[in-house]
Length: 156
Picture 1: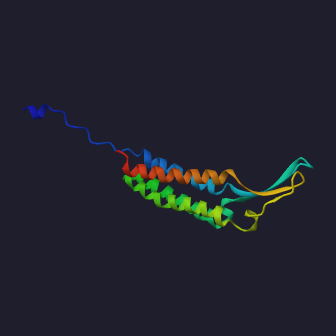
Picture 2: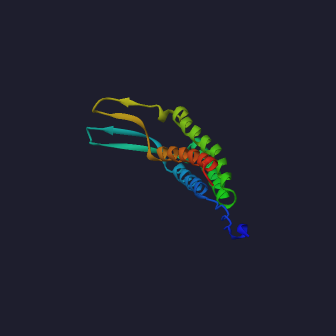
């Protein structure tokens, strides 16, 4: 009789927060792949201005790989949100690949314009620069790795 009066525990609720966060980070990685990643900037104090030429992420092979990693991450995050949240932990693979590809973009580059640097004092300065898209892609890729690990070890 006493057992019948005990309330039954509520079924555990499945939290899909990490899986949705992985999907959002994948969307951000896809978005950052089409933003400018690097460029060549020429400045002169004689004319008081400068000229810049930008390279978008998808203009380079490494940017295309990053775009594909973002799409795979989006798929893992959505699959984790719709089925089991731990499926989103599989996004650690494309997230890690995206971090590696972004580092390779810096070290290997896309040709001479990434390594050309001329400084003639106040007359003319030509140098390669990193643009905000590369930093956004790196932050998104690192967020994917962290969130997918949290999806695996987080309480559910």
